[in-house]
Length: 502
Image (cartoon, rainbow, N blue to C red; front, side, top):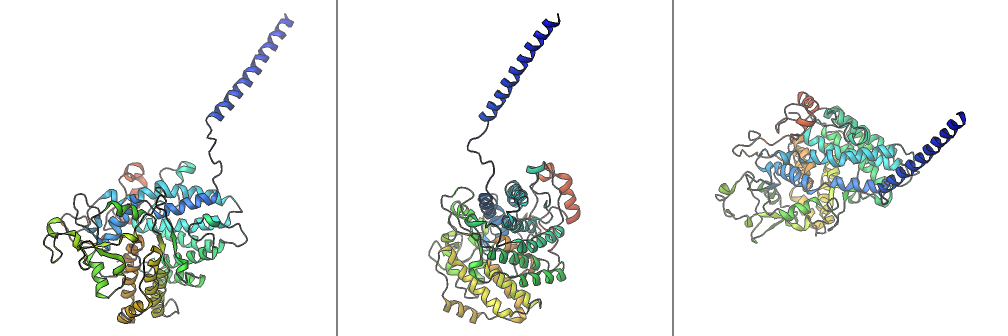
């Protein structure tokens, strides 16, 4: 009997062994069948860096809606006459929430998950020092425009849902965000290393040139430091001084931009190029065109063309088809009003994040405030020249040296009105970079703009101070967005963000 049991046991064990081998083999075969042979197991840092830089340029979705639709029209650089299907709700302060929330939507579903993944990966690799430093700078470049538009936002936990299932991130105060961003820039500038592997040619900004990356770090520090002028002047002066000592942009070669391609796909074409292809109603604002005409600005010939062949004529903000008919010589025909030169907004046009001209104007302001020993007039004049020369990146003929000299002679720097003059020139220099133009206008409120008061507008006839969070935040992340409201104020266009104090 014992012998039979032993035989039976051996047979069972044999069958179990065969079954185990068969199961293991099947599982292995299934894994192979369900594996993509073309998948990249470890995405090269350079490819991910390129993708992030293209994401930062934006897509037609948010650039058409939040950038052109709200920011650029709110500071009266563009205007339109549409109402129910308004393409520029910032022209009349109409509550088009899908336009207002578009940058928030796109940033938190695209940019921030990739940024979080990239930063987690390079943080763990001691050889990826320069990739990590560049990522820190790009993170600030991205987050500062989002917080500048909305105020308190998820920052420390942004994008972590894709790493640790944190799908309802807490909102951080803008003060905390700014403190951290400034620290990140300071540390990133020191982190860049010539002895570490280069980020190389896949870096669309600077081709791996860490000297230029350091200048960008300090130039962004200068920008963010000046944001604090109204809320914390002492901190503003401290960070502005650190930035200048560190070393900011010094010429046109330092501008930070991405180049695009005509057939480059949805993240490799200029977002404005796509927007202007389909939008035939936007016109340059009368405020913007008149300011250039009053100052004899040679840039007007670069920026404006009139379809009917008539003189440059900006479209007043806040009009609809009926009130347009009551206008003067240009009348109700949009062909008589200035349009943007389409050569500047092709699919392969560059996208500017920060220019040398902006840096010179910021240095001029720092000198005026007594935070810097440089000569304000020299920096102001350098800024004007650089702002005009910057259009060369778009493949158009820029004003001659003689024309710029004549412009400066006709509009000399006036120390008594220095902040106003710098603010106006900064406004002109950030044309087609409305995130920055809108933020800087709220910071110092120059040029002086007359708001419109279109019937039924959402601000009571005042220029919006921020954009609104999307409705989805109140269903998917309600506890955290309500906490932000309790700290910052209502989710309204008139609520001022932390650094934008009266």
